[in-house]
Length: 166
Length: 244
Image 1 (tube, one colour):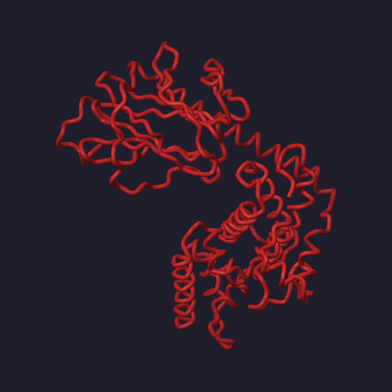
Image 2 (cartoon, helix red, strand yellow):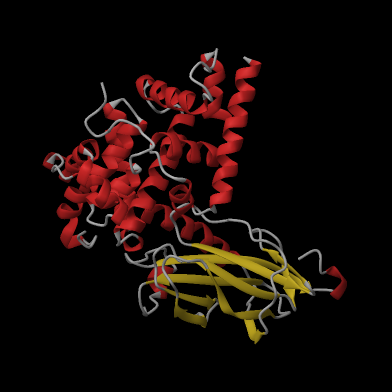
């Protein structure tokens, strides 16, 4: 990986931006949304480049920041309908504990994005969408594996409660 | 249809994080082994190595420049607000002496903004240590301890500001850029009337203070200057330890 410094901006862009964009496209189906989010993440990366000079730190940082940004944008309703729908469906799949289990009501599902704690949503996206292991999620969010298991367990419990109430 | 930058989900594949690390030239041995046999994952990694649109370079640079100016502007506005308070203060203050570091007996709470250098000020009165909330008054005899999150900077300096005099350097030292750290020194508040005014400077190496500019909010790139004004009342009574 090239050093992230002013002299290597274009090289860094060529090497790192595709990762950022791929991560954003997994979260957001609207290409405009994904591209805009990817640029925002890259701008922030560049501002903090001194912190992320090795691939391991850099990728953990990218996953953490892009996931938190997408949750923020979803809550602020600044994403397009296509992106919101994809994110909701991702969480719907994540929440289903068997193939038949689905939320009966879209309005209930929306409350997952709006009302669930950010750290649970973050763990759920990293687990179900990016397919990270518990150890990898722990590394990305800066928590213990035990905490990650607890977050994912609570996320599932909340989803089950929503299903039962809907 | 699945987008080109994804591959079929399966518990047998490495995570996207692991594959991204491989694309950056830092694969684990398990991922290297997996990539040798898995066409889906090979395609994903190969896709990451395709050059992105060159047309984006210029707009990205523009966004980075804009973000830099926005941050500078925010810092300047924050400085202007703080400087007004400083100028309005009549008293001369000084943080005096060095005291034994207090034992922090309360968990800290986060008071900084995401991605920015942050400062926590702990006030110890008697046996109780509290995180300063930005408003509470300190008192003569209180001891201050400072924790910083350098957010990428490698050096921190702390100054005490007194009206009419050059700011006094209380602490200067290197810090790990990626870790919050409690500074090793503590300072005791004197009982002079006025306010306690501190400035915390983050940089990547020793800097020559440029007070005439800094006090106007003109801080050069690569340096962050955070001012703090702590209201002060008389001497703390020993039994007021729960109310710093």
